Every structure is written in structure tokens, then in C-alpha cells.
Length: 376
Image (cartoon, rainbow, N blue to C red):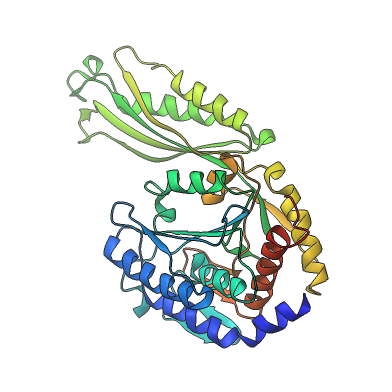
């Protein structure tokens, strides 16, 4: 196995060049043409390093790329090439490699991981049983690729997600995510002449903010966070309409169900007010039980590679790994670039870790698909 690491370290200049090509091809999720351009770059890298061209799957203008090698039903490598950065971000956040630190829009989340994925596969002699799926809408919640991701997960026995890693820890658990929008309807009136004739949606909204916040359960890891709020038109008018957005994070499916029932069970406090809720559970949790076997394997392989100890961490943010775990397939996340600053001005990748993490991915794939393969 140490030869895998050596081969990937020797190929670091080529890996950096591929990351540069991906980062320089800006691909915000909301720009389908830009996302398609980046898909072409990713397809070229994957074709060159694996010897096989991908299947292009249209997703409402945002293509997904799928490779299946042989049976393609043992392990799915999952990633995305869209970013949160608008076209033009390179002008203020250029691609650079300085002092062992790589920067550029989307480098950490997760274009370095896309390149690492293919370089990991390039050092393996046999890819039978491997599937690769890259999507272009992860950053906006996978609205067009969700069904595809879940279907690919169900036909495989394990999923390795090449999302990035802060500090090197693998993502062994992710919270489930729900999102709600509350619309409050009331009755307008003059705030000075006859406020008693109105039904004040700002007041009703205040009641609902407190009721929603009370649904949180810190001991269970459940957060219910009112975020965006709006109500009213002018200072001297009793407002007759209000809107509130709510973010929910949960550690278990049972908590996700509990909060959903409670949200839809809320009733107005003011006479004459009405509430309408939209939204609900979006991504199921990725529980520790879904990653335990794969993390134990990764930890052992990392030590065998001479790379030291490996940590796992539970996080509140979601990824497409939530979807694969929700589909019932063992899933290990955070196998991509090591660095930090996702979506922020200091987004960066630690260059020295690139071949090391690619070596771990290669070793995992070989253990899951090769002779004497491990069952996750």
C-alpha cells in the first residue's frame, strides 16, 4: 500500500494542474451554462485518468456525469462540481498555490475532491465494481439529481463521498435538514385611528417565532432556528401579511418526524390570523451507524499507509451523503481535500494532504472491490 502513496505523491503536479483547470472553470449552481462547462472539464479529466468516458445525464440543464466500471455495484464515489461562487470570483480570489496552500473559488468545496477522486482511481489496476457520480446541483440541494443519487446508492454496497474535510477528520455523521416557510395572514388597519380593527401579523409572527424556537431539543442535538423574517408595509399600518423561514437540524429520523409534526400542528394565537406552512424534511440524517464499518476500515488503512491516526467527526451541515445514507447504503463522507474556509474568503486546500487523501480513497476502493474484498 505505501506504493500507492508514493505513486500519488509523484503525480502531485498533474493533480494540481487538474484542480487548477476545474477551479478556473467557474461553475455557480445557478448558471447552467457555466456548470455544463465545468462538467466537460471534469469529464475530460475522468476520461484521461480512467480510460473511460462518462455517461452524460441531463438534469434540467445541469448535467450529471456517471461512470460504471464492470458491474459497477460495489462502491459509489460521489461528488459535485458546482460551487456557491459567482462567475467573476477569480478576479478577487485567483487560483494560487503559495506556501503549501492552494486557493481559488470552490477549490475546497469541492473541486479538489473531484480531481483527487480520479487520481485515486488512476493508480488501481482493476476498477470492476466501481461507479462514479458527479453532479452539478449539490449546493442548491440536489433538486434535479436527488433521485439519481439515491438510485445509484441503492445499487451499491458502499458510498464514498469526496466532500472536503476541515482539519482532516472524516464526516462520520451529518445532521438531517428540514426547511419551512411560514406565511401569516391578518387584517390591515390604520395604526393610529383604529388599530383594534386590525389583525397584526408582526405580533402573530412573534408568537410563532417563540413557539418554533421552543421545538428545539439541545440534548437530542435538534436545532430549530427562525432565520429570515418580513412583515408590514408602512409604519402607520397594522400589517396584514408576514413571512418567516425556519432552518431545522436533527441527529435522528425520529427527531425530524417529531419536529415536522409539531410545526404543522402550530395554530395562530391572535383571533383572525391564519398560518400556512410549506416545506418539510429535505435531507435525512447520516447517522454514525451508517458510517461505522467504513470508518473502521478507513482508520485501519490510513495506519497501514503510514499516514498516522484518523479522526471522525459529526457535523451539522448536510451533503449528498445524507441522501445515500437515507437510501440505506453505508456511507463515509469527508474523503476529499483537507483545508478550510468553505464558501468564504479564506477557502483553501492543504497541498501536502492531497496525495495522502487520494491514497486513502484508492485503498478503500481496492479493499471494497478487490480480492478478499471487505463488506462495509
